[in-house]
Image (cartoon, rainbow, N blue to C red; front, side, top):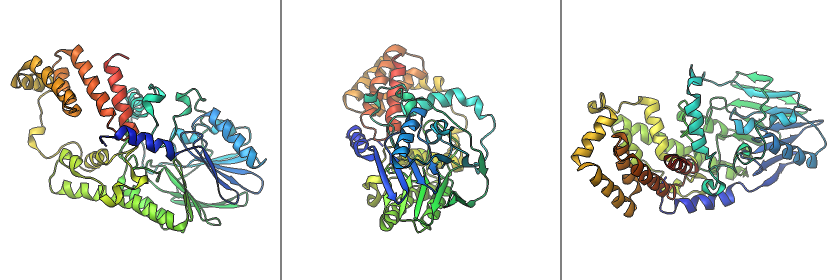
Length: 424
């Protein structure tokens, strides 16, 4: 989301959202935040420790081992992955000396075939989204946690595959005296689960809730994240009488009333975006019309846990549109569009050539109309005209946009692309 003070809003959020904190939630259950990109949950059982998620790197997981040792001398014998994202399981290898079982769930939908043929572009876009090649000053934050360890020289990913993979909707088990219920809950990933501890009324929700507007769509690219299923999962979470909800990023929710209030608002905000997008689609509105017009209602927009510091409403609308209807917007003009270069050449002729376009770009930048400036730059780049100066001007425009962007992901993408244009 572009805001006049977007950069400062992101800085303010980062200063308070995930400070290093070890919280004893209830007797024997601890929520550890701010020591890695993701959180970890420590459960002290009768003779061992059950660990939910393992931080993002081996070095950070070694720090987690020390935190556990300060709590109890019992060994970690069970690890549970809330889902398969690497920042939640990258530290697992640090526990290989004691762990006996690693539990995960299989994805509800298979990964598209031949996805490995996209590794190069997905890796590049992931690096842009997360700001992997940017400085700490350029990044500010990775949005829902501190920078990953592998980026800042704090260890490497040390994956250990699960030994137990469930395909059921729900599994109940008692592990070393602790009753746990594992529940499949599609959301940010198709293999996401939440863990319910009925004796303590603690629910570990993974990434189906964290304290800002969620990534209903990831800029790096991914299979469609089923927003309707995500809402259903939040409804399921809300059906449990939880007094404590422990997310995989950001702060825990403590107190029955707090849990119900926050998760209901979080759920209803997502539902609003989905409902309004589908309603507009059904009326024949285009993806651009919907993306520019759908906003969070005032009662949600200013809630601290729904700030657009990670995902944004606009990107979510675009993802929902293509997820349901695909690329075609219903306008026959777009069935067989001119090739980009031909279209750009004709547009340049129409608006007076390259010199006049560069003049307009500079004027737009001077008037703080950075989006218009970069769109004009794309005409010149597509037409392969004045490439050197245009790359510099577009980089200037992207850097200007980065100052307005509240989303860490969007900010990283603007800056990374600007540096690429400049050859940095």
